[in-house]
Length: 168
Image (tube, rainbow, N blue to C red; front, side, top):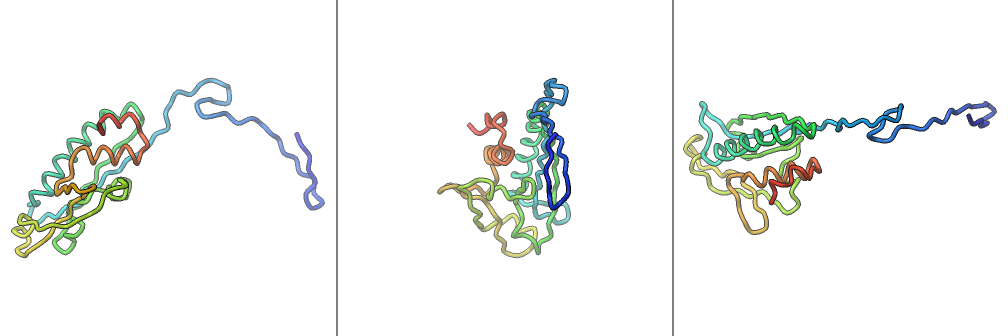
């Protein structure tokens, strides 16, 4: 125990060693991995139950990746949550967007940018000419978000090397 005078008062501080990560106070190794959560949100235009082709293909790919992630990540104590946000035509600029823990994947990936291109499928749904969002990495444009981009975003965000096998 150490004594210290602070502003005329005598203070006592009991200094105890704190356990390091992976240890408990009894010096036994704690093998539990801290639990992480990954919330994946997919935003897309939907009118009368119909989604554009581009967004629909992104959604199918995303759902397949999420199923793989749930199996792969379970052992690493990573909980995967999926949220689907159906957008009205007045929010079409957000359509075909994937967020991970609230962050758009193009912000997670250092060399990605959003671009817009004409989308005849959305145009037929809304009855007016529309552009949809896609992601450009270097000079390659993706109107539908590919599996590798989804995995890479999750791995980078979670700093998880085990998921990295999907990045190769």
